Image (cartoon, rainbow, N blue to C red; front, top):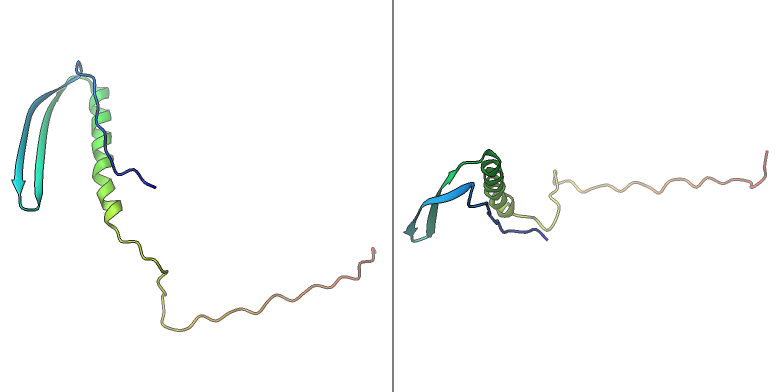
Length: 92
């Protein structure tokens, strides 16, 4: 089971919220958060978490087929069982 959530956290000494705004439309709401970051490590962690969260919907939206797709319309041919190797049981 995959985790479909994103959790952002930071030290308030290294990053502060400058502004927050929303825009609502019929199909959803866009939330914009502007941060002021003073530490490179905090910035890198936030950017990595946001980058990973942007990739998740792409992975989740790809439909998974329940049956494998066939490359051609021709029926698959089965192979015969391998020949049995008979040994005499005696040592040489």
